[in-house]
Image (cartoon, rainbow, N blue to C red; front, side, top):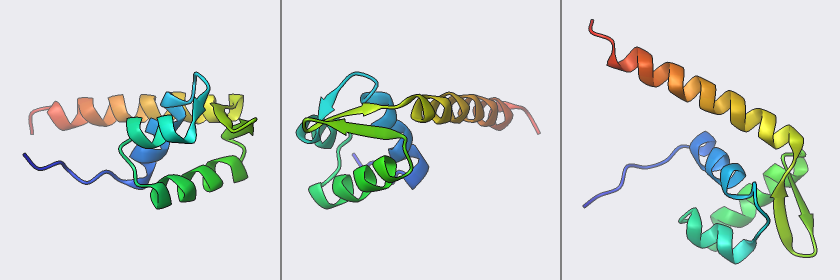
Length: 87
C-alpha cells in the first residue's frame, strides 16, 4: 500500500493539530510520521513564525497557530466540497 506524498501545508497543519496538547519532539515525530530532519526543519519554522512555542522541551500550538489551523480547516473543507461537485 503506497501513501500519497503530503505537502508542506498539510504537514504543518498536522503538527499544529497534534500540538494542541503539549507534545515532545518524539511524540510529534512518530505521530506525524516524519523523520528527525523533517521534524526539526518544521519545528524551527513553526516556532520562528510564532505558531508553536517550546517550553521545557515540550511544544504547544500558540493562539496564532490555532488561527492558522482553523483557516486551513475551512479551506480544506471548501476545496473538498468543490472537488465533489459534478462538472
